[in-house]
Every structure is written in structure tokens, then in C-alpha cells.
Length: 279
Image 1 (cartoon, rainbow, N blue to C red):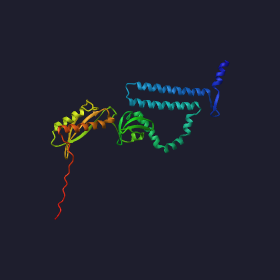
Image 2: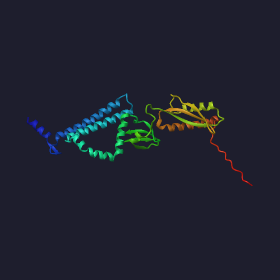
Image 3: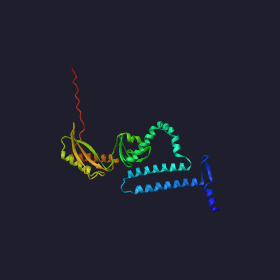
Image 4: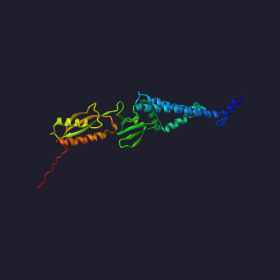
């Protein structure tokens, strides 16, 4: 009995007095440590469970894990404040006017936070997606509450405010599938064999590394230009982010193949008429 009383005294020992009615005791510290341990354990288990799922792609797993992370941290933080003697209802009610004032001053910041939550919930833009926003082609690397980290094609990391992705028109090339269709245009001389041009373009594109076999590439005779016949070869590619390198290789091979077959790629010509000088 005496030993029990000693343990009780140790647990109730006051380390710090917060207010007249609230003390931080040894038991309070133990409870706070327990909250930290439980929070870390929950975060680990939830992350492990989400990433083991075979029904979600990597982008949705990332979004779900981040949302769970933020929710658990907020709940744990509120629970910790309650243990320290803070009444959250009174604190929130008392600071309502202050929050309104701060909110008006930090509208853009709060807009970014709300946009971040929207991006994480609706998964319209996910990690590893290749997007085009305001002409900037980039790959999404991280989606946080305020900003999104992207990698551009010239290997530069940029932090975009989340409102950029919710207010501007965004082309998501990998939203539903990992591949997308691209094209390479070329003009040839009017004296060229049209069938030979089309078959050559298709064969060069089909044999190019990185071009998908299914759907197979196809060629379209697009137009009669001012000085050339206009053709376009269309192909599908999974390496959307680095597709410009593949397009460059196709143009390179087409140039030398056309040269080998005697197919000319004309350049624009202009005739300049000079007025005759009066004698």
C-alpha cells in the first residue's frame, strides 16, 4: 500500500505550473510521450498499409498517405494541448477575431493551403504526373500543403504555389494512362514519291527506341505547302517527360534516310523583283 502511494506521489509530482488549476506532472509527461509514440506508430502502419495496396497507383498512394499524415498530426497536437490544460474550444473562440484578421492579411497563403488539400483529395494531379501549366512542361515530384515541387525538362527543380495548379489551365499528359501521342512534321519536295515518303517515315519511327509498338505509328499526308508536301508521323510513347529526345532522334534518322533515298527536304525560296532603273 505504501509502495502504491509512493508511485502515485511520483506520478503526481508537479514539474511545471501552467496555471492556478493546471500543473504539468510526471504523469502528464508520460501521457505526452505516449501520444508521440502512438502517433509515430500510426503514421508508420498507415504508410505501410497504403503502399502495400495493389489497387492504387503511386500518385494516389502518395496523396492518401499525406492526407492521413496531416490529419493524425493535427489530432495528436490537439490532444497534447488538452493534456497541457488548454481548452481548445475556448482558445478557438477567443482567437476567432485574430484568425479573421490574419486570414485577410494572408489570403494568398491560405489559398495555397486550400489548393493543396484539393489536389491531395481529388488526385487530378499526382506525383509522377507529367503536366503542362502555362507552357511549363514538368514532372510532379512532391505535393505539399502550400507548394508543389516539380522537375522541368532542363532538370531544374521549381516550387509552384498550389494555386497555380488549381486556377490555371493544366494539361496532364499522364492523368489516366502512362503514355501519350506525339508527332513529328516534315515537308518534302513536290517531285517526291508520296508512298515511299510515308512508308519510310513509318519504318523509321517504328524502329526508334522508346516508341511504342502498340498502338503502332502511322503517317498522315497533311497538306500541300507553298514549297513542299507536308507529312506528319504520329506515335505513342511512355517516356512522356523525355519525349523531345526521342523526337530529335526520329528527325535525325529521317534526315539521313531521306538523303539516302534521294528524297529532298526543300527550303523556302523567295523571288525578289527589282524595278528597272530609268535611263
